[in-house]
Amino acid sequence: MLEQLTRFRAVLLKIEDWALIGLLLVAIILAVLQIFLRNFFDSGIVWADVFLRIIVLWIGMFGAMYASRNNEHINIELGIKYLSDKVKPYVQAVVFLFTAIICAIVAWYSVDFVLLEYQDNAMAFAKVPVWFTEAIIPFAFISISLRYLISTVLLFLPDSTREAK
Image 1 (cartoon, rainbow, N blue to C red):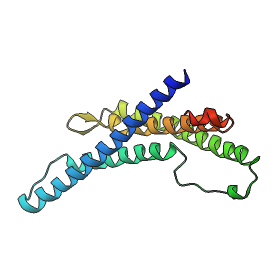
Image 2: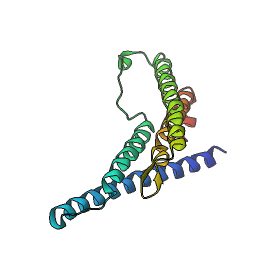
Image 3: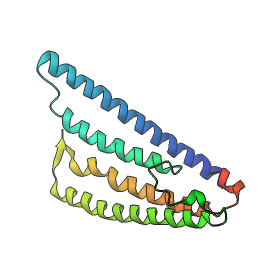
Image 4: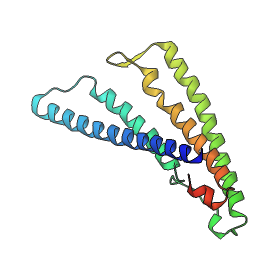
């Protein structure tokens, strides 16, 4: 069972990696193309600027998810490196739980935000609804919240179990 979960997690992480890489490549190519078209042909792609802003949002959310994988995000360490090894997991658990709760609250309100956009029926570009472009926000914060809840549990598992993640 643990082996299947490990494989499933690895597949999800690969999908995240490729989505982040793909979005970044599309953003770079589209931005360079826009610059080229504007400078040499006095034109451009009508929807490209809006699309690029949306891609930046998605890159930011996928980047936050990536950073939360192994606790690699911006972190304020309140002297945790000076604590004893017995106390560290408990302090880290409090920090992880606090992070998970804050991310869950943000996810909750971002779902409300996306639902309001859904009811508004506004279009972002090319018949793509605004709510769809913003749906990454609750998705990312739910993912981050779940990761920190899982990280909290993993703090108290034996080392051999933790390595199998």
